[in-house]
Image (cartoon, rainbow, N blue to C red):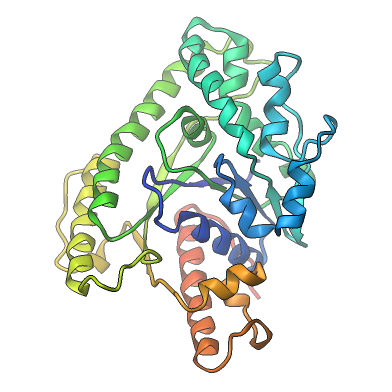
Length: 336
């Protein structure tokens, strides 16, 4: 049985999505799970969060064709028409945390993914291999590495790369900022994801070689949303953010879930809200500098005095969020 694949997706950028994936990957590792963090964003921000510049240069500047250590190199034979996908060489970050390395060249896969989508309706085998490439890559390392969960970071758009990545996903978590742009983004995101799910279900029966080519189910089940205040502007009053926070539940229910709207007097009572995370502004630069999550910061990293208390609060916040997501998707966490 393949491990659950959770995509973190919002078609609006700047909401703290990559930071969320990065910290949850470390938190699930801390909680005893074996994790793959997969960077399917052509901007490769998640990869840059995990790896320092020297390592990135070593990987991205390596031109050996027999090294399949980025997502683009795994799909390159398929793009070139000389073969199928390759098994990725994952980057070991920690004993139970591995990274599927992102690649700026992945944007070159967009056109192929776009054109092959309609060709699936004509029962073309290559089309199905292209569209299912991400899912098959993500599924390959699991049996060997005993992976418990795969967390996927996506770029902020509604393009063909994200469509294929979402089709590969079992679950979707939506990070949001408390602002008008996130609210409008939800109104585009929800119907688009539902349409992609429906269209993929129409294509699956047209697989010309079902005995030789397994396909993702395209489940894409919404798990909930996370409100992040990483980008909070302090020249705006708190009431401005509260206004948008109060409007998110009804928009999520109607546009993402396509459910009848249930009003909540207190937005924190919305069962679809997984967490409201603070900006942690003083800890974030330290974490980025040391290439570690905020809740792993030590006095040697600059976390002294009040910062130490903040580190504990961050750990509690992300642990609670990780546990809530695990509960929603029936992901078993080890007990200590």
